[in-house]
Length: 125
Image: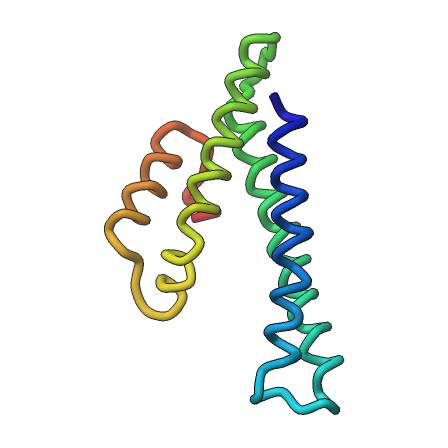
């Protein structure tokens, strides 16, 4: 089940990333001389976001895993961590909105649900 999910994710990234870079570089507000800096800034932000996502997913996984893991707790921890990851990805526009000034109620509810089931700690959210 993970392989098809990762294939779809990789395909989406492969299709979205070049278009996003083209949008940043091709926008009228970025001059030709600054296009390299704009692309580097975009890619650095993307890589930092990916690293933060991996760290948050791993933290959620190990928080649910518990002190005495077995096969069932591994499956539960992985399911919970990936579920919250999907919720947070689906709420990306809400996250951008929150950074701009306020979190919409639906995003706050999703974040609280992740915190309630133990996959997201207060210090992350």
